[in-house]
Length: 302
Image 1 (cartoon, rainbow, N blue to C red):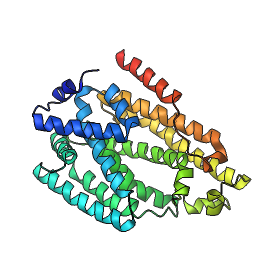
Image 2 (spheres, rainbow, N blue to C red; image 1 turned 60 degrees about the horizontal axis):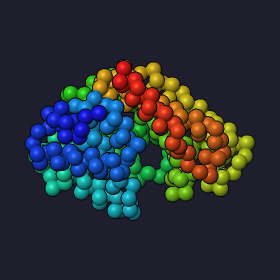
Image 3 (tube, one colour; image 1 turned 90 degrees about the vertical axis):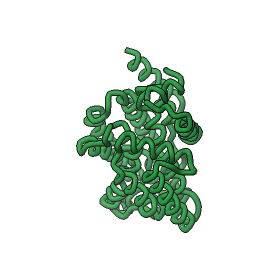
Image 4 (tube, one colour; image 1 turned 120 degrees about the horizontal axis):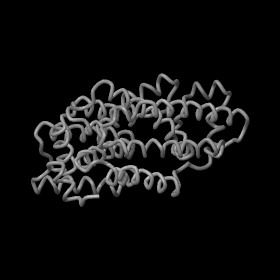
């Protein structure tokens, strides 16, 4: 693995001030989201790493503002961030080194601005005001408004000129599976925080109430509901396996394969947990990520 200085050089980032901006963005991601940054740093083609690190830093910044404080604070914070982002993208400058790095990445890679504005709009509506889903259709609307563009403000930077229609659709498939697995794995914590991420219509189909879930009742109806949600997530993950590597740039395929493998490990743990999902969030553990990274590193070296 080349040094960070060499990585910046191989991406064509030569101005000292700009190199410092990208370094600060990468450090912010490493602190906030090491599970995503470390595979990217270890496994991606070096010329892609700075662009994607800046994208990941921006995505994380928006997520944090959308999820912090009262609804009024979230709304105000996102409006201010959208204004700062628009200025950075228009001028290439910002008081925030993270936004300077991201604006440079967007311009250099030619990412269409509509992915950024759609993500920010979705953060202010679908995420900041989130109160659960009534139906599967509402869940899909959430993906379109927030989760899908939120992924492409990051992963879209792998493509010079931005993703084409097929590439964007492939990442939409990925997001559908990732969000289902995340919602199941984080079910206990979300319920404790007042978020119900299973569509209410599906609770009604199984004669399960929100109180059943909040009180972690291990009943046949609850188990049937959770099993059905796991089957939906498994089907979505199978769809990812069929398309995602075909729409990924060669320099990022090892990373994406590792991400997908880890998603499968987590879903398997969710399936084993059953009603235990209501008592404790399901993480990756240590063995699965370590094994996945080791196998990916060996494949990359071949």
